Image: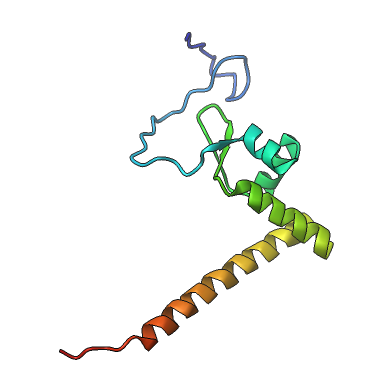
Length: 128
């Protein structure tokens, strides 16, 4: 592979050359972002442009690699389906869908913590 050089006048993203990261990143654990854009788009039945818009709105988490490609977690198609159900079922715009999804996630975390604390309260304590 041949590296193409850009002049300082050309900004990042201008010119036909490849983009190189400033710092090499070494991962010690495998990345949870494993699905490419094409896989998420085909599994969710949406065009890639709409999936990109969901990422820009913060409805779906994604990570960009050094080449600028988006990678998604395995649960991304279900998160996209959830956002679409909320939008269609409650007639919300995408900003409101994001707020509702955040609130539902918070409720889920609070209910899990409550169940955990109730379970811990029922366990007998030993004083030995």
